[in-house]
Amino acid sequence: MLLLRPYHRNEEKRLAKTPKVHFQDPGVCRSPLGRRGEPTKEEFESAVVAGVFKQVRNAGLEARFWGLRTYDGREVDLLLEVETGFVAIEVKYSDHVSGVDARHLGGLADFLDRPLVGCLILSMDRDARRLSDGVLALPSTAASMSPRMKSTSNPVEVRQ
Image (cartoon, rainbow, N blue to C red; front, side, top):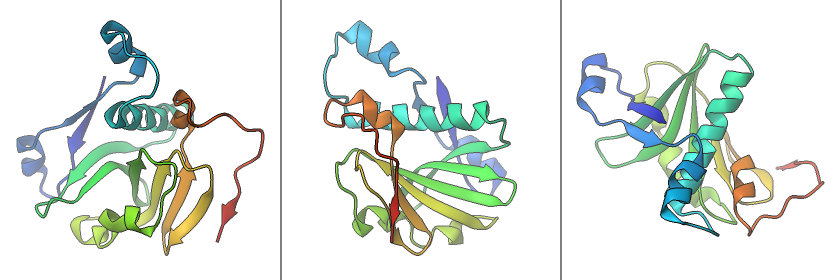
């Protein structure tokens, strides 16, 4: 299991907020329940977050993992704290993402005590593209757990 502690500038408030739980292996949840086929939105999000966690750890990168929910209800699925600042990651269980999917990322820097160095939206969309200034949409490797997204030998290309 992976517990994402809630981020807050005030460290004492971090202790009072509820962490978000993700399973590092979606099969741990699916198999005992006899679930087959399409993952749920929550299973997909857990698989993506677990994939990012594993990639960061395997690469030997120093990063802290947070969840973020603001007082006005905005939520960011994963907030990575790296040496230079924060990287915000939204996970969308969608075949096509657009600028609307980046709405929770706008103004996010106001809630952080260090610079926001990048924003990503990871989804089942096959196309990588820049959605807005500082927001990049990329296909998620966890999308391979869905029959809707067949593997392809084409490299990812970022379109402006």
